[in-house]
Length: 151
Length: 368
Image (cartoon, rainbow over all chains, first blue to last red; front, side, top):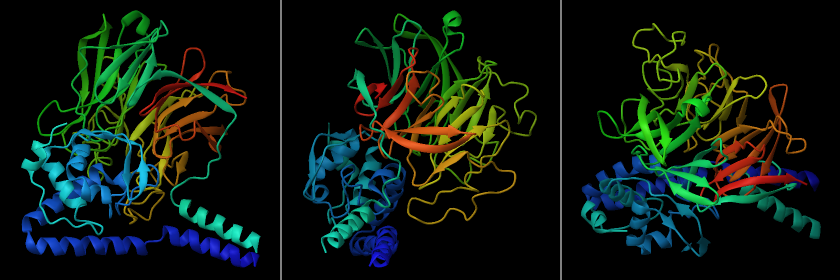
């Protein structure tokens, strides 16, 4: 019995870290990107640039799979907040975010500093995160839309 | 049955945290006091001879904190506040009382090309304004990358100034190339000139201010109170944060050797050691994301004299490292969960002061 529990423990620890989940996430990214890019090559290009912005500025907190960190950094993957609060999300990236928000039923009360991105970069990274990890957004976010949003 | 159910619960709980957390125990035998409130990112701070403080806020503000009052310093250089870049370290010249020099590092977009890179400046403070500003070093080329600006400054006993610059998100070109800036510890005279005996003086095209190379992003540097060696720490990628002792001309290996892996889980290299490259004194896997570094040399805390303190941005605690025979033999969490620990200094009163993001500066008051 004891041995079984130890085995189970080791197995679970291993599973919780293993990469099959990552593979799934990557395929989801490709799938959702493909769905949209068929309709819009502009989006594909923007997402491509957005992906490298994401890797530079966002990934260390929100993680490569967009799932964030429990209690600290809210998820972007399948995030009800992101998909429903387009303007607020853009504002957060442009000017920073503080104060309580609820994402997928969980409350977060952290602080994200403004990242110093240009409007074009904000548009690209928004297009990337809104069409990755199972998220899908059919309305392309333009530089003009970003530039109109003030603090 | 109850026991089994209990165990399954614990196993489930542990497996959730297995990747995210380190195992350092929490030290609950201390308390703290909030000294400076309402700071957003106290990247660095220092004590002036009158006991007041200068505090660097990353966004590009220097605050003079005296008698509970905050005054904004004017004449602060314009900073490239993007990603991890902004106003970084601040240090006094060892002979500040006589010459008044204050040294700053910051991300700067000065010079050719879009983007920014780390700069070193010295200036004097008069009526809450920086005057006689001199840019002593500006790394090139500018880049719009958001990562790895460094930076920390220290002076050694001979008056040499050391400062760090991270590899600016260009690991394949910068850290191993001594003709390029980034991923280096630099050594200068206090006026910004390059010492004649710097290790790469006379090498073709070398950046002669370089003192050591092969670094990723050092955001902690301090002189050991007894051995007087230069200790640094640096951020690894995913895993592989390091403590190193810096020696002239040495290669610290990034990205040829590392104990870390890429953020997305893929390998950078199979090698953790190679001849001609330095091994870290200590490394952290998982990464704690270290910033700020200080030795405790006072007797204010029972049993902690000689300990090394390292801030953890990621896990939001101050890592209290017990050192024996040049090795980290035990680590424990101080100020656990208070916030992202950015900077740490021993004050002139011997107490430890800690800069915490979105909180302020706290003083560790006692051990129980």
